[in-house]
Amino acid sequence: RADAYEWWVPPLRTSPPLVLSRLLMDVSPYLSRRGDGSGVELLSWYHRQFWEACEAYCFNNRKWKTFTRRKRYRELVDYYSGKWAGRAKPYNKWLAAIVQRPSFFPGETAGDRMVPAQPLVLQGSLRDGTSSCIINLRRVRNLVVYAIHGGEEARAVEELTSVEYMTAMFASGMGSRLLTEVVDATNAFPASGAVLRELHQFLG
Image (cartoon, rainbow, N blue to C red; front, side):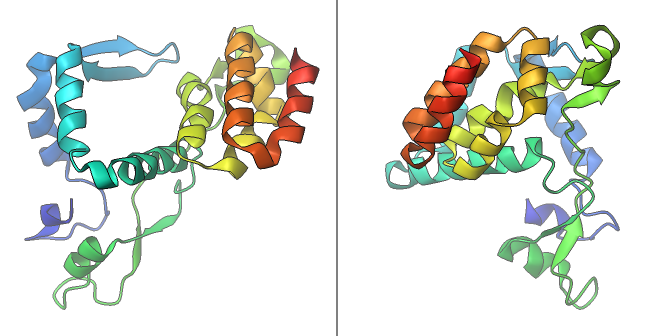
């Protein structure tokens, strides 16, 4: 949120750690923690009613619900594809107004948000066999699914037709999930249907 920079704009344009720490402390009694299989701890609401309430609050405008949801999916696709890793991300109009104040950084239109890269393989190599590498399970589970929901046809097709992605999916024991993603993408993106049907025949 832009108002986190109301009184001071830090050298690194990331969310202030204190704000995140306070937030996690306030909601920690309502969170569950679990691993994702690649050494990362994931947080989620421990009861379904919490995320249903959050969804009702965040998408309460029926007129804009589909648009907002699709926009959020696209932002997640950007994250899992590593689009902004090591790159300056343009500010939205609210953040730009805060950062560009005369006493801070006038004229600055983008900043490095320190977004982590999301490679398919976190450690080792797929060519060395599955026992010696750690696959980025969060990416392989989420990127294509979010791209389909977000209407990101080019990204979904590019990932699905990538030899590295297919290898990572099968190495993770998710071959059937890959086939499901291909079917879902075929239904969602008729323009790419021919390529995706051919891919399904190749896999299946």
